[in-house]
Image (cartoon, rainbow over all chains, first blue to last red):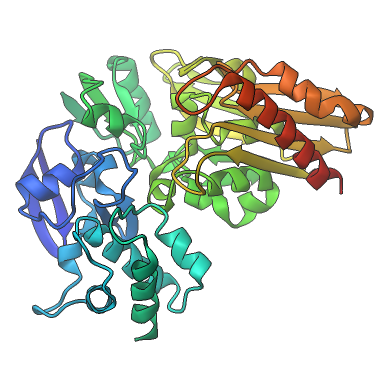
Length: 151
Length: 263
């Protein structure tokens, strides 16, 4: 079936299987592999995207449900080839090891800082509670969020 | 496989009448897992995201009507949270921000899992479920609606339209046991209302029986209430916890909830 949606500000169309997730549509049909596919059950957050401005797990959205809606993926955050400030803060703080969880964390962090430019540690932990990282132990991720907020 | 996306409730009900096998989807936090893991291959999916009548909430004569499409995020703050703090507390424990942004109260009822976090709060607040079809609408108590583990009283041609509840506005709380503070399917959970107006204690337990269960007692029997809640449950051993642990933990939660609500 055909869906038409806005992805990172651009009108896009995709021919999707009726039962497939938005994540599959983004990665396999729209050539946007930034959102990562890991648990496929909403546990890990590595597929996080903004759906109409709200962070969601794209693995839990039926691609057909995105028809007519606006999606922002991690690829939509950087501008003109420069890293987004949150991406730069993650790199500078050493919050990236294997990097698999990073796109989801960047999307979740960007959403947090838009809502709360100077978040408390509790707010940061809450906002990132749906994003798992198995490398860093989270300390450097919290550093990165604080750094992005400070900048 | 087909996806049908109605724009109005009337259209949705007509589609459900014509294609009763259609599986409804709202936030997808349950159904998408079944699709992603090949556990379910429905012929037809009925996407309810675009049905405006299922969104939002209204109030009439102190009775709240919560649309089936209300998300947990929408239940966290504002007037509904003030009227039903027990439901707001439970919503806060659901999944993660990403899950709360998508998961809906109607989906929780449709899935009818004994671990559904919205169910114990709605049961202690004596909520009713509004079911709609092209034949009309009917209301059933939540207790009648939940007929078994992941089984509810919906007829094939019906959709969950709303939850109707007259908030008690009495001291109330929700508690949940799990291995971390997010992304947890409850090991066991408890909602409790100390209803001074009606001289009654009500508690509902989750993940401790085939369905969410309700226990009532007169307010003056507070001394034995925690034991009574633990005794009423019929938990099983599973991957998340043992029956014995669940029963013990329920007693502890009930005692703590009473302390909170009767302080």
